[in-house]
Length: 259
Image (cartoon, rainbow, N blue to C red):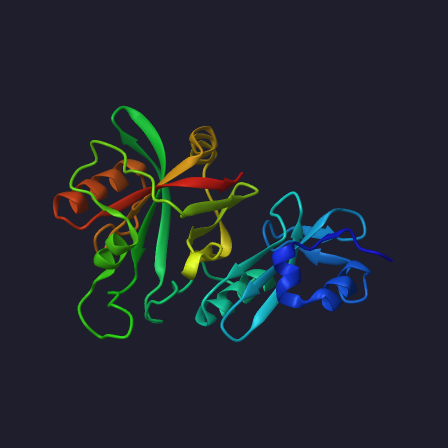
């Protein structure tokens, strides 16, 4: 029985016309599945279903999602990230993946919260590695902030004003959960995951409402040991202020992708 599958042109280009047609006719796709976005059951015989292809340097994994959650697309990840994508598809544990081009021993911790700047609340993500991050291919000192400044992040010395937008980057939210921070691909290609959750991360109703209203998210980043896991938003703001005053904070505003 034909499946109600959406196969984007990007996915078709990766898997080939023959495999795409087998999927569309139901010869090589499951009827039921667990949505790779919201983790609830789906049925490609009863509802529109997106094909989502996770692509590494050497391997690729095809997953399925409700079309109402995310569109059919290719998600490019570093080979060492692909296992994290597999865990996301199969329901494995974990909430952070090794960022592309970074040492495998360091992962990026991501905290969401509302940050008050100039009298207005802004939905924010705070990114902090679990270990120092040297420049790729070296074993030198922690250069996490320098690497991000080279990507267009701005140094923050106080939180008196929101950071400016960073072209080509975005924050992916699907079905109200945080999935990834996306960056421009190499050589003008499509976006790739800079950080990707092993499992979609919950955000608060207030955070999601502010993000939907403004259609943008402020992303702050600090070296390991600068912020920590703060249980309240006022404590998170205090930690951000201290990191900024010590020259250990960068930031950028990114458009919100998804809902």
